[in-house]
Length: 310
Image 1: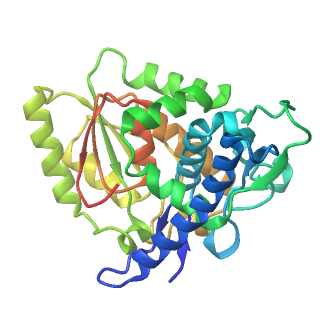
Image 2: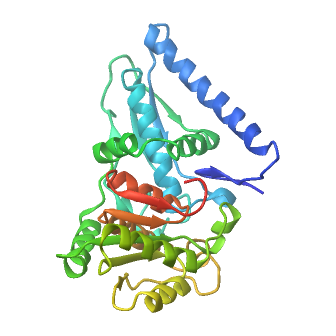
Image 3: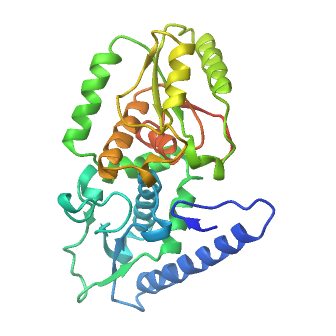
């Protein structure tokens, strides 16, 4: 088993997670100790923090990396006067890099993040990349952060590119106008390795209960899922009510972002789905970084989580 960016693989009842957490905390504490020396005036060489993404065998999905960026930005905010800046540069690493689209795939979807890079208070700032274990730990901490706190960071620093927001607005105008919207996010395929799989019927029953309680039996149901079978189930269970985007989904249980083609385009689809979920005032979801991050874009929405953790 490996440690994946954003969340360590869970081995219930073992000491793996405790060991990982201790190592991660120690690594981050060493960085905070250096910054503490800057704060006290003993070290005048401030750092520019560079956020990379995970690559190789520990490469992670878009919203695991998104959580890493949120965690790094929140960390930098707490140490703003002791750092020279922060830059997000995913370079040619990770799952979403496409040679024809250039380096730093973060900028395929979002505006560049380069904070304070021109500051030169004392000498030349040191460039310091976050270590893999630091990135994992910061993302893991975001999963326990209040939505309001994470939302402040997201709205301050993270801006999807115009073509993303235009696609979101066009879909919402065509499908949501004048209707109450209930978002439903189902993360299937390999997610059962980290969180218990939820039967489709339980999702459907929960949606019916929520609609009764909110008085919205005729609500529009926006579906976001990596499993085509889930879309088909919900179409049959709620005829005429469901809306979803026509994008590739898994039909064989294999996660698309690990085994599909044009993964950079899959990233676009995932982000658009996330932002559409954020337009719903009520979201029924299973454990997923995508669903978690939808709450950062709309912290006032009510979320019903059907399995443990985030």
